[in-house]
Image (cartoon, rainbow, N blue to C red):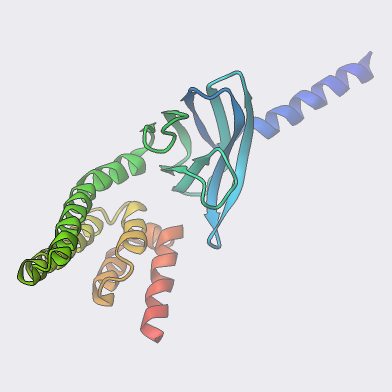
Length: 229
């Protein structure tokens, strides 16, 4: 009897130790009937699976992992490198994600920590620049097609100016939010090809905690690589 009780307690302890994670991601995927959901992060330019869940006749999910610091994580229904993924800035605690199977990536509604809120603010504002740029590119291509050289050149100048404005916005955003891991992240992901002096300016104002974070280290290493060339 004692042996059986000990065995049961051991199983329970092992089960709890496997499920207690400092980071939890839960939510629903409307329209999903069957599939496997993966929680991933990027390591050496590839995706590594942190947790997975076989979903069968349920739209609810809960995944977990242990994070040492805030960083970008991804939800995917496939391990394929080119699969559609929901990206979000995760930190210790709970992140809720509700989406649909049909528009898995684009219908995602995310409730997360302060880093995710800050990233959403950035994405919302930078999207305006990207939408305007796409419109100008379409107009410029049409002008070229119609052999309206003067108009095409004028539109090309507008595209260049808009690109500069979007870069300046990102630089100012990073400087104004230097106390967040989001600052070095947007620097290395959005303006990696900017003048090195701007990236260096961002790098130099980062407080120690952020400078020593995953994206702070990546930013500094990237600057050193570009300076060495």
